[in-house]
Image: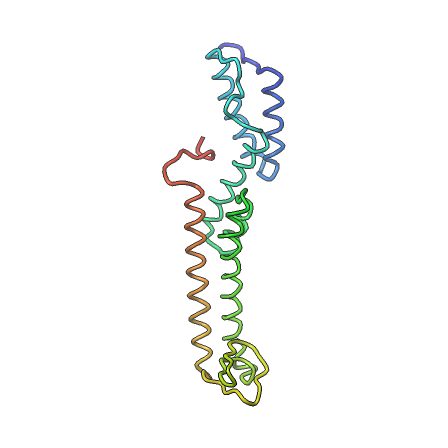
Length: 194
């Protein structure tokens, strides 16, 4: 058996900072990642590379990449809207993704919850939930109807709101799954598979 090689101080400091950045993960997964990185750095050292850290980037960014990817994979496995939205917000490092994709999907999720709540509340307060037309206006949802308007859905508001709510929930959930899959990339080797 040969003796274990030690890494230079800058590489050890790099691993220490990566470990700190992985603090959100459980200790087993954190040590698995750090040990794999150590192994790669030792391989580079054995090959005679001068700059062992070349191409790794900032340790905090590398750690965040691991945390993001693991969060996305876990959320995709769970499949719940809340888990996927949370994971996308963690993984969204660029504000364009958050502003243009993640936040609208979260708003669609909230809208679907509101439609389902309206369907469930229609039997409790039927005079205030529905769709009203008249007076040049269209009111949809929960309102205090004015005398000049008439309610057009009646009890059909329950299945209409329920179906619309479930359809919006399902489609926004599918969209979140697609965004997560696109962020993970179908063919590239992932960090968590090291």
